[in-house]
Structure formats: structure tokens, C-alpha cells
Image (cartoon, rainbow, N blue to C red):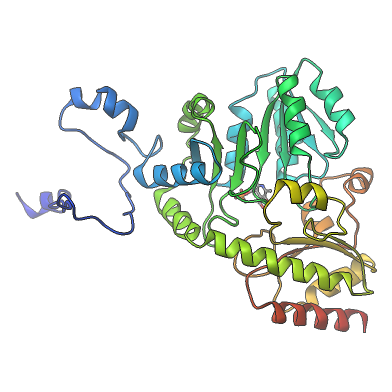
Amino acid sequence: MKKQTRVTHPRGVKLIDGNDAVVSPVYRSVKFTYPTLAESLSAESKEHGFDYTRDSNPTTRELELLAADLQDRDDAIAVGSGMAAIWLSLLGNLSAGDRVVIFVESYRPNRVAVRRFLPKLGIEFAMLSVRDLPAIERTFAQNDTKLVLFEAPTNPMLQVPDLEAIVGLAKRHDVVTVLDNTFAGLHNHGRYGIDFFVHSLTKYANGHGDVMGGVVIGDKKRIRAIKPLATNMGSTLDPGAAFMVQRGLKTYYLRYERHSSNALAVAQYLGTRKEVSRVIYPGLPSDAGHALASKQMSDFGGVVTFDLNANEQQTWAFIDALELFVTTASLGSTDSLVSPVKLFLGSDLSAEEQARAQIRESTVRFAVGIEHIDDLIADISQALAKTFG
Ligand SMILES: Cc1ncc(COP(=O)(O)O)c(C=O)c1O
């Protein structure tokens, strides 16, 4: 073989039977082949084989199976971002003429998907409050309501939906439930009869703020029904990213535990400060969602939302004065982050809708990281002193 040919056909190195890599390899190959066409068409190949990475890839598949296990389901589709996962769950289940229920307390891009883009496809929406069960029931009872997209807890206002009640109403009225479970994490809420879980893997799953990904998780039958759309849409997660997310997942439980204990300590500290008028964190016994969250979740995550006794200018000054908390979007990575809620997460809402969502100009969201708690408290304390004297 000439060297020009050799470089495109290097000698493959295969592990001998019984000689295994301890960490799974990254299969970067886009294409997979079989010795014969007949073998490529066998039932075994169709069920477990690989052809083309947009369809499936061993590295990505390993992540999908792991995510499904953690969420107590048996199948999943990994995609390029959390928003791609949201879109897959919407387009995979809806047709023109259908109605979607969304909540005013939700993550802004989830709202934007439903309010701005779905109507272009002839799909209408109703935007309710996640706490308004009578309105939810009335809307579910309308024949054209086909799907509810909700979050637990909601981003950024940390409202805790009653999962048993919402799932019960949805089943009664044949409404597909899609729970964006990014905040609660892969280890929470699996025992509820949710049809599809969606996660931004960019957050707690990867955990280091250096990879994007998303996943839709459900029972095999439901996942199989939307798989052809995922393949055709080309929303596939790159195997390199899948490997990074899976590496992050090895420390997922440790990190989530630390995010949660740090967030609780931050929430408690904020509650002692006169500059703070309200703290929202479902882990606080005084929080309106505490009883429900304690029933539904094993821990409460790293996000704390609060209001300052301040106008918008002072609120921004406080955010600018923080040194460890980095001003940016996102959450669930090792480092602590801060966002002005109205500016970053509420600007698509009218003043009336912001009021319904309880978003004020003084509302701040912390995504608490895994640093030493003493340093985080010291940073908040110095920023309060600098802003309020
Ligand atoms: C609740 C929630 N859902 C979905 C997403 C979107 O995820 P991604 O940024 O990976 O597209 C985010 C991102 O912040 C989120 O917080």
C-alpha cells in the first residue's frame, strides 16, 4: 500500500478479548460499516448497530443510557443544547391546531419558543401561573390542549409546581407532560408519571461550564416515536461533547450536594440582612414551596433568588460590586454566578406579566457554585457594604 493510501487507511488497533479500557473511548467516527451489506441489514444491526453519527454513536449512546438510568426511565436522546431538547420535545409531539400550556414563571427561552415561534407553525399557547391549578385544569380540559411544558423549580423564580396534581390532570385530559428538570437535576422527580424529562446538560450534568448539551428522556416507546425527527433535524450531540458531559457526571452527585448546601447557607445568610427584602429558596423552611419541594425532591439545588431593598441602579451596583460571583447567564457550574433577573430573564414579559411572575427591578439570581462557603458569604457581605454603606 502506498503511503498516500496508508494515511487514510491506518492499521486499526483493536483491543483483544478481555483487555478493556477503564474509561470508555470517544468514538469520533461519523461513519460505521459492516463486512457485508447483508450484515448491515440484520435485525441485530438495526437494533444495536451504528451507521452514521447524526443518527447515533456509541459514545453519545452511552451518555443517553446513563442519563435515562439516572432519571428512572429507559431511553433518551442527547442533543446539542438544552434548547434543542426543548424543541425536540415540542415538535415531536405537536401538530398545527394544537395548544401548549406554558407558565409565566418559566425560563425565558422556553417562553420564547412557545410564544414567538410555535404560532408560526399554527400551534397556539396559553400562558398560566404554575400555581393556578384551577386555570390549569380548565385549559387542559379544552380539546386542543395537547402538551404542557413546565419546570421544577422554575427558572428564575424557583416556584415549585405540584407534580402529582399537574400530572394527574394531564393524564385525565390526555395532555403530554414535558418537564424541564434542569434545576432539580437528573436524580429528582423520576417517580412522577412525567412523559418526557428535558435537561440542559450544559448545567449540573457537565458541571464545569465548558460544554453544551441537552437530553430528552422518557420511556422507550415515547423516545422511539420522536427519534426519526431528532435524526432528521440534525440536533445530535457531538461525541466529544458527550464524552465531556459523561466525565462531568462522575462527580455529579458530589457537586449537586455541595451546590445545595452552599445555596442553603447563602439563602440563610441573605435572610439575616436588612438590605434583602425577600429570599426565594425551596430549601428554606420559610419558603412558600418548601413543603411541596421537600415531598418531591431529595435536595434543592444551587439557585437562590432574592430581592434587595433597592432600585434598579443600586441592584446593578450590588451585582457589579461582587467579586467572586461572576455576572453572566447560566448555572450549575463549579463557579458562582449572578444575574439581574429582569434584565437577563424577564425582558420579554410586559410589566403586568413581570408582576405575575413576581419579577422586580431589584430581583437578583445567584447560581451558587462549589467554592468554600466562607468566601462566598464574605463576597456578598463586602458587596452589600460597598453598595449600601
Ligand atoms: C431551565 C432551563 N432550561 C433550558 C435551558 C437551556 O439550556 P441550553 O443553554 O443548554 O440550551 C436553560 C439554560 O439556562 C435552563 O436554565
